[in-house]
Image (cartoon, rainbow, N blue to C red; front, side, top):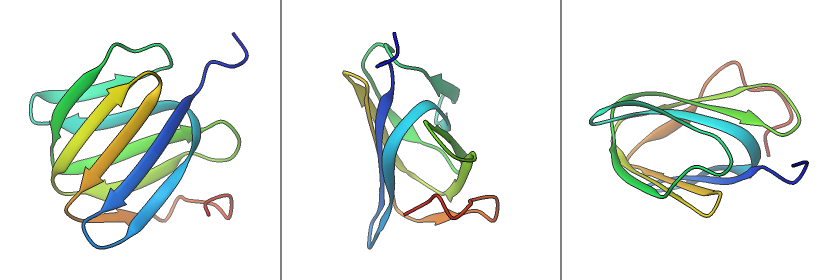
Length: 96
């Protein structure tokens, strides 16, 4: 179970935001808040305006403000494409 992690990629319409391994992703969709852990069933949802939270495998929690777009989960891969996305102040130097 040590290899149970998510590969996360976040892009905005005009720039790359963040990618890396994570243990959890939380986002607001058009139907409410969703939490993704490794092994989650496939999902395709409209992304709602709000906060996206990522718990990287190592490092501090990453918070990204997003306004709209889509959220896709398949085979432990999470892809978030947002019209606008800004990494919040709680992000540490671990973000690349």
